[in-house]
Image 1: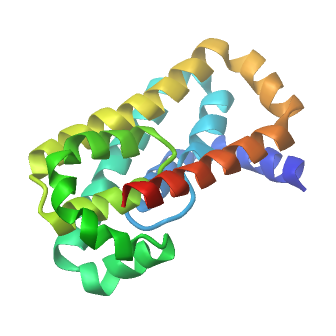
Image 2: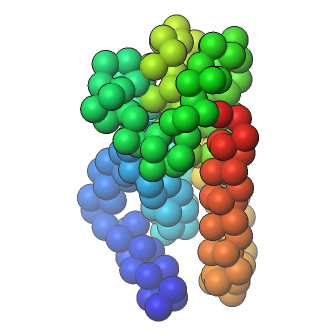
Length: 193
């Protein structure tokens, strides 16, 4: 089943509208959606390695735009939308205690969340709730998300076929590793908040 899903994702990644789907997933993941854009970014670069820059650029821009949407959810719609998202990650209770300290280190926190497997959406919403200055928020988001997506795209562009063979040979193990990183990100989130 995992192999069929992988093959289907590769097929979708080569679709003529794949870049728009990637933009939509990147935007949504930064503010409310659970699935990271890497699930499309990776096979899209593998399917068309010469388009690595375009794919990483669209992923970054859409993700930062989604981060701004998350920021505005936190700033203006926290009770209606933000709190339920934080509750989904069991982060709402601890968030209140960390609110003041957040802005002291907010730029580094946003950068780290943007680059790592920690759920970035939590920090986009938190930045809006705490009233973090929007210019440093945009800069930290752009650098963090850009570094993450461009690093992945460059590695895939440079080492595409060996990486593809590695992924296809160890798909089950890599899926488990990805899930472990996601769980670790949630644990780090709980520790930080």
